[in-house]
Image (cartoon, rainbow over all chains, first blue to last red; front, side, top):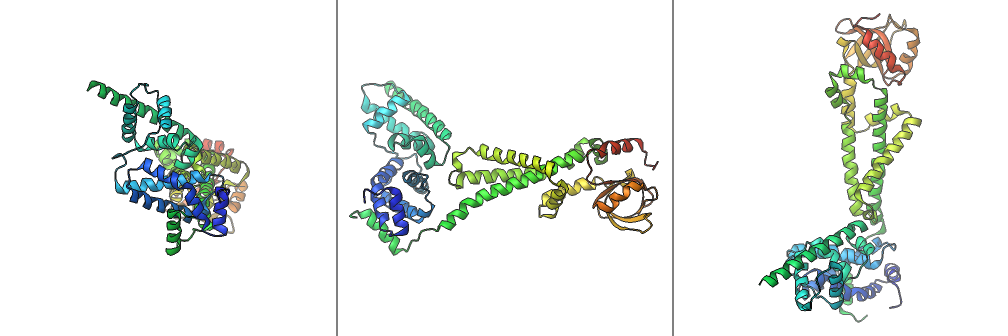
Length: 192
Length: 253
């Protein structure tokens, strides 16, 4: 089944057997779980519940899927909306935001936001994490999609339902905000 | 499939009998917005057509006088219906933006301006090639209340018998062609004296649904006519009408 494309699996789910949908779930389970964790601070149980909601919603709306859009973007769009709705119900998005910053992301964000490079990388990781929790939700969304999920502008545009220009503007502002926050935090640390 | 989550989800789908939403449901959902856009565009083009033909037909020097000044005339003339429709078009654009498959790839202002300018272009074609009076009548007959009330105010502006102006339609014409009963736009019935009637105006009486009368008030129900014109006039008529209006002093020549 691994050889079948997303579109082929969808067709088989729609016209042959819904069991094929299980393979789609398996294909995207890890990615979705990681995405939810990056977007929220939910417990494992909450994440599992949300995962079920996302995939059931995907299943119900399979007839709405348009092959001109990548399945991944469509999945992320539905997931994104459900995550936001769920998070709003449970808590404020700013609180307890935690994100695992891997080396790749750390390098990219350092280069793109022109944060001063120091030997104190661990400090910077903490600052970036804190800064990410403090910037606006819409800015955090594009940062996560661009740097963590490695989506391009078109894909982010499809996921967030915004024009590519708006995505570019949001990303540019997000980086600016992140830089300011990180500089503030660094300065505060030096003052102490 | 050995995965726990996929099994759990498939079981839930089976157990709760979760069904796929039909293709038709989504088609209706999406196409309805585009149909609304088209509808709004057509309505907007009709309104532009009506507005432009009104501007084309109206003689502002007379209109200002009969409406009691430029401000009042502007208030009468202002296309509230157009404003109302523009708001609706804007709302539809936003709805489209958020609820259709690819509209979000286009800026909201682009959708809005496309509708607006397309309506302008269509109205240009309608003015050039269509019967604008029929469009006007259709708009009035339809359930477009705001348009109707605005149009009615403009019509009533021309019902000023004390100033020698009446507009409305003929109820019945006598055989000798000396009198006819007339109902003005405010609903009052008049007996119109057409003894000074010019022969070449007979055609207007026979063919025009609405007419404007220029003359003098005789009593509470009588009006003597000097000039009869079509309610919806061609631009070429206006110069004569203006000259007549300026020269006359509520007396037939």
